[in-house]
Every structure is written in structure tokens, then in C-alpha cells.
Image (cartoon, rainbow, N blue to C red; front, top):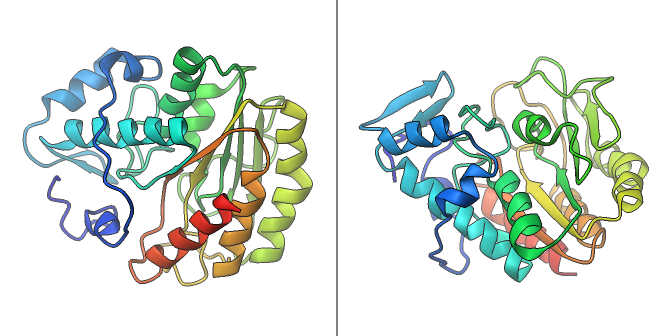
Length: 270
């Protein structure tokens, strides 16, 4: 584990959570379906703590960490489970670490499902408070992957996914600050669910972030989703495809994260 200190994306996020311990590592080939060889070589070569960009810390142990995080996400695809992993992934671009994210866990999992499990159509639903700009960019224009994101938009990172950015297989639902369960669940019911059902995916992957919670308190985030709201988001996602798996994205309040993850797990399993 690299020494992240007081950085919000730190080891304590996973130490606060329970769950089965799984040791599975992603292969170079699996990473290379999504990420450039240059980016992967950079991650392998890190020596000591470094900022890859202003928000993203990494070190000499980061390559092992992302191999394990993605491997566990692939295991979740195989089992229909919820991968409790870090670093998160949905901001990572094909050739660049970004926004706490070193590699795109869910994107690698989508390509794994297609290329190794023979699942042709994959939908990704992202309910992290921040737009998953990396996942959006990686699959933009790919008719075999639908990406749908509900997120806060405005003076909040990363500033992407705004009005007018949706297309046939990209569904961005930007919400203003201050929205709660009614707006988030309404966006899911009115926009995301119909799009996913029309796409008819073989697999649904959920980028499960919990930083839209009413008690999150992270810089510039102002959403009011409750405990029961997250349970309901998970429950509704779970019935959108014949197979489903989820991976942890954001959620940095260590007092609330374990409870919210447990509620989401309950919702996914109903």
C-alpha cells in the first residue's frame, strides 16, 4: 500500500470495510485492452511517492495495487459480486491517471467480459457524484458498450458530462447541487433505466460511488442522497441485466462508507 498520508483516497477506506479477501491479479493483456503501453510502463516504473497529476498520488507499490484491484473486479464479474477495491477507476483515461484513479477498473472488466467471457453487450451505470470522464472517453463511439452516469455538474470535478454530451451509447445525466433521493432516483427511472433496457445488455457493471451522500463533506460536493436512497439505487440497478457486478468508486467519509456499502450490497442482492 503506498503512503497516501491524509489524502482522501487512502488505505483506511478499505480497512473500514469487511468482505471476503480475494487474491487475483489482472494480466498485462487484460490491461492493454484499455490502456496504452506507455501508461502501463509508467505505473510499473514508479519509485517512491509521486503526484502523477495534482489530485493523484502513486508510489512503487501502485502497480501491484492496481493489478489486484482490477483482478478482484474481474472476479466480481465472474461471481456477480461487488468488488471493494481501491484506487477507484472511473476517471482514469486510456493513457493517463486522473482524479485519484490510476487505471479504469470497470473499463478493463467490460473488455474482459466481452473478450474472455463472450458477453457481447455491456452496460455501465455510474452513480458516483463525479462524472466518470475516463469511462466516458474510453467507450465513446463504441456501440457495444453503453455508459450512463448520474452526477453533480457545475463547479465540481471534473467538469465534464454536462448538458448536450449524450449520444446513442453515452447517457450523461448532470444534476445541480442540492439534489437528493427524489432527483437521483427520478433520473435513474426516467432516463437511465429506459436507456439500459433498450440497449439489452448481457452484463451490467455498476461504478458504485457513495460521495453523493448527504453526510459526505468532500470539497465542492453538495448532494443529499440518503442511506435508503443508495440501497434503492443498487436495487434498481440489479434488475437491469441478466448478469451484474459492481466496483467501488468514490466515498471518502469513513464514518458513513461502511454502512453505505453494506446497504448497497443488500440492494444488489435483492
